[in-house]
Image (tube, rainbow, N blue to C red; front, top):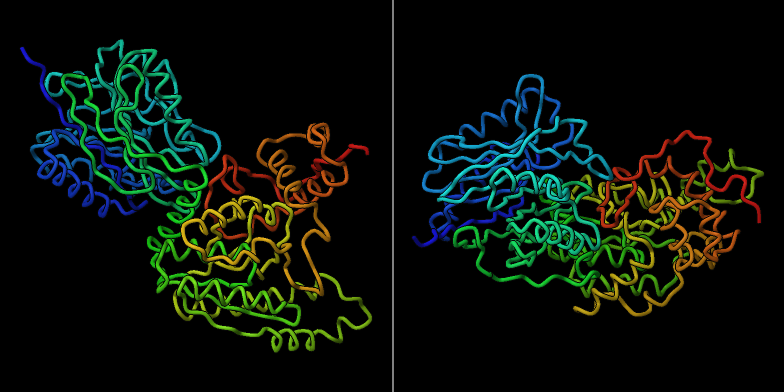
Length: 544
């Protein structure tokens, strides 16, 4: 008897956290499209798609969970002629499970509870969910199919146990957050797992931006020999069909993967686009200084939203060099965005005049520099409020690490696109963007970085060169290396001591910064949670 054909649709769709009704509607539409246009027998959606992922402490609300569970039962009766596999938070008694339900012919025919609950990095599922205890197998068109959810397939024992229960094919629902290099790691680990147990797998991943997190899609299908036979595009919504003969997937189109630098750029673009769109802003605004950071953020914003939705403001002071204004104007015109020039000198004079009696007899210091930055912040926030546009800040990870940012000044804003982008990566991303179409003057890429808040000021007056600083910060912030370890790798004591002391002292600033897009393995915020009030000093006891 010939083996049956089974067509499985992979629904790599961008959903909205918390909007259960809208997600339910999108699931219906995707299922009808997959059935009628693609001839699919089954459609598989990402993890917790009913609520969106991560729903965080919405999962602690009984009314929210009740609505999500009701939505699953409603879905079961809405679409006929195709099976749906959907992720949802399943309530049973006092326990909440991260579950996947198979809906077919008006009923829930199978339900699986995620067994491996990740509790590291940005993932804290044990805060909300209880772990499942056993595999789940169901029969569909003569094939015994096993269900898994995200972290499960990183654990060989769960895959093996599911196969031992009779599974001939695995479906896995995923919400796997992006960081640089993640897609290669993801495929390598999972392909190795499947090759060892000789079972094919359909991996459906979420796509879209959700606050700090980016989900890159790149859903794929792997054969029992561990070879990728189909891959969806990265960072794009896509409903695709892969045909199986029995449990054997037929080879489909494997979308090419971006280079690492292109991948990081696309992640940042998607993060801006979805934050603006999902939060209902009318566009974006930013301060354009003529420096490298604001130039990159402007290019990212335009690529995310289009030039008609982006606005730039040039805010010169007495310390602004003419070439900075020239470069800022060139960038704005190259990207075809509306821009304004507003001098901050009247505001700075007003504030310093108001404070002159209190400041009498004191030397000028960072206070006067910060007044300039805060004048700019007031101007930008006023325009943002008036126009309903999101204010993008332009600080990078290197600056945020060492506190080279002004509270209520250049830190003022609603979203920080390059908050997790080290300074040297800013330059690489800028050069990548120029390789597509020149939008950043070469002079900006060559000039020494400067905040231009004092005469002839450059960052390296008070910081190690960024090539050195970024390397130290990566070791201390992302890899948790001690000062001794970093110094043993050849870095100067003075550079290590200064960088670490600045990192330790500036947690209070980072805690007050706007959310930003995570692209490294360890970003500030959800990834790295340090106390503000702390006696810990990473450089203590280290001698030159």
